[in-house]
Length: 102
Image 1 (cartoon, rainbow, N blue to C red):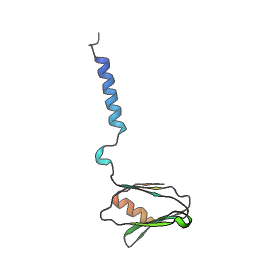
Image 2 (cartoon, rainbow, N blue to C red):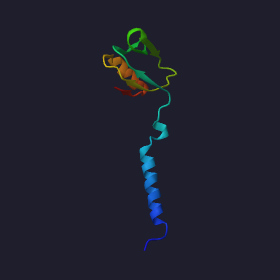
Image 3 (cartoon, one colour):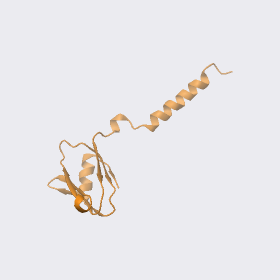
Image 4 (cartoon, rainbow, N blue to C red):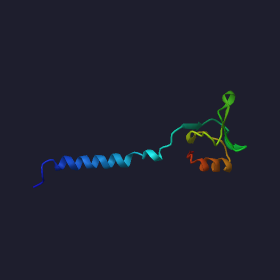
């Protein structure tokens, strides 16, 4: 015979394990902005040690720069269909620990 409450205890343990494995540990979560790069002819490059992100389309083009100090980028998401990505930009992101999703 099983002791009273053992089924509830097993269900509780299963829920705890699922919760622990489904969430990212807090020390691995990045805080900051998510940079979305979209449009036509997008560009990620490095100029003078700063990441330069150009995106948009038509009259809505924009260019943003990000320095290494005081960086608060959580990740870069590229949604654009055409454009260029410089190897120096990949290195810059890797050095900062910023993931790139393309």
